Length: 178
Image (cartoon, rainbow, N blue to C red; front, side, top):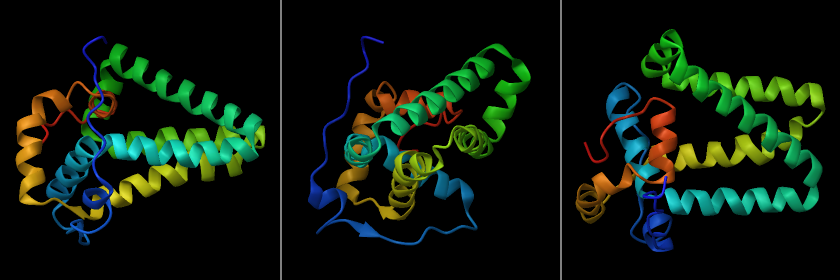
């Protein structure tokens, strides 16, 4: 854990404005779409964490207790799933073969637990909305040749970042830039 380092914050021009190019992904080629998402998640992870943190802080200002309950529930479910995937071979195989289904299952279980606890609005706006925004951006953001070259050079280091570890826990052990 000591060799984990966050990558640099990318410029707003590169992330969202000016030189940023966006296009609807080809949904018929799921491997290419998945590769685009993973590469963008790794390359722009600091920007995504800052964006999600800003949204969480806004929600935490208005609903601090519900945000805390939501964060605890989602964290416990994610850690429980990760533990089960590391210690149970069938769960590990399922996670490797169906990572999107696993993420959806964690989010659905979080939603149902929070609905019992009465914190559904916090789940939707504090957890699901930032995740949805990140996934939409990662899906539609096209990379420039300069970014692709930087990503190739950083690909080994990006695996030892917080997003690299999170993707690994979700069963996405692909190489960045492939």
